[in-house]
Structures are given as C-alpha cells and as structure tokens.
Amino acid sequence: MSDTAVADTRRLNSKPQDLTDAYGPPSNFLEIDIFNPQTVGVGRARFTTYEVRMRTNLPIFKLKESCVRRRYSDFEWLKNELERDSKIVVPPLPGKALKRQLPFRGDEGIFEESFIEERRQGLEQFINKIAGHPLAQNERCLHMFLQEEAIDRNYVPGKDKRTLD
Image (cartoon, rainbow, N blue to C red; front, side, top):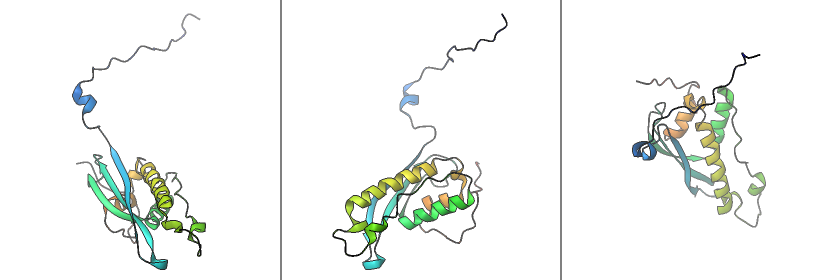
C-alpha cells in the first residue's frame, strides 16, 4: 500500500502581472446594453423600441461596434429562431404582460415607465445570456439581430460561416 498516488497540490508558477496586463483591454469581451426606450405610434399601433448596443473584440462578429433599434417582437423572433435551429437552451423572455394590455385601465399599462424599465432589464439579461453562449455566437439570426438595421425574416437559418482570417 506504499504505492498510493498523491495528488500534486503545488501552485502553478505564473508570471507576475504588469500594469499593461492588469489595466489593458480584456482579451475577449462582449458587452451588450439595452437602453433608450422610445414609445412610438398611437392606439393599437403603439409600441416601444429599445436601442441594442454591442461592443466586442470577438472575431466571430463582423462589426466590433453596432447599435440597432429593436422591439419586443424582435426579441421573440430571436428566441423562436434559436429554439428551432440551435442546440442551446434558450432562457425565457420577460413576460408579455397581457393584463397590462387590457382596455379601461387607470394607468398607461405596458407604456408605463416602471414597466418599460422592468422589461428593458429583462431584455438585457436575456440577450446577454444568449450572446454569451459560444454556440449561439455561431447562429446567423443572432448576428442579424445584433448588427443589422433590418431583420430579414426570410433568411436561411444556420451557422454563420465567418472564418478567422
């Protein structure tokens, strides 16, 4: 019994960190912010849009910075596309708030500032979870959602074939 294996628990030797390493840009980053909600239209054609700003240095994205305007139904489209065509578990979106859409309410319903802010936070959490997933980063629908002004709903689903040159 003297031949028992003992795990090597010594620390790995790492090089000392200098100021460039400590305060330089991160090696890989992906930042997505949802901000500046705007409600447009009147009556039943009224809806709220949000700016979706992305900054990254990941080579998979063709643009390193982009800013597009999206509405809740665009987030639903992205969720449905990913559920249909990818192998990832897609997190839930913030709820539809159907009760807030009922007529004869004493408040603004889904156009009330507190609701819009709550939804904005939920959409930001949703898109950051999705975009942070390595498999989702290959999906064409995510690239279109984050980087193209208009979403082509007739696109051919699949992987983004961008290669690292």
